[in-house]
Image (cartoon, rainbow, N blue to C red):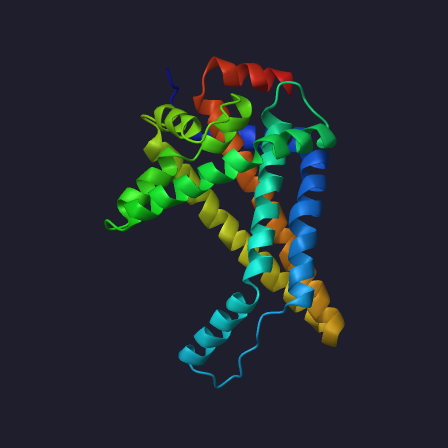
Amino acid sequence: MTRKLDLSACWNDVMQLFRANRELLLSVAGVFILLPSLAFAFFSPQPAAPADATFEVIYQNFQQFYSDNIIWIVLIGLLNGFASIVMLVLMLDRTRPNVGEAMRRGLAIILPYYAMGVLSGVLTFLGSLAFILPGIYIFVKLIVAGPVMVAERKHGITAPLRRSWALTKGNSGRILMFLIVVAVTGFFVYITSVTVFGLVIRLGMAGDIADTLTTLVDAVLSMLLTVLMVCIYAAIYRQIAGPDAEDIAREFS
């Protein structure tokens, strides 16, 4: 039997998860999210369009850029996905593993996790073909499949999806509202931070140093947002999964 999602309690749980596991989460995110994104930004910079370029030219430039770098983009996506698995293990595994143990467990489930993600994405895409709303609904219904696979050790491809669908029953609207509030707030914080830091950096420095520091700030903020989203998925699961999730919470208190 699922519980009603308390938005305030869920946010408090997000913060508790982050504070309790901050060093471990940031170390994993730094290696598998921050470093690959920085390397890609420095060695494969996005094309700069001239000021008078038309939308068509800009689109063609970006299309060519992504076509030329598709292998690296996919690799970075896989590394980011692995980081998410390891972070979920660190937060939801009752045995409280260290980073090495969490990575070993993450590797053990990486193939079904990715396969489940692909299936979830296909289902969401197919739903989106019917006027968007069904796709959003499916996305929300399957949102805790990853935490289910990790916390409940359901290592099949479809079992975590079915469990997520059941857990979110009666909570879809609350989950969507919570995600919208967090996404909108996170977006404005990100844009404001990048803009302010970028202006400060470019006022104090110039040339390649300013570009490098601006890229670093952007990458760090993006990494922090990714960590936050993983904490949110874990917190939503803990809030709606019932007594088992409460047991997990006590393990980290």
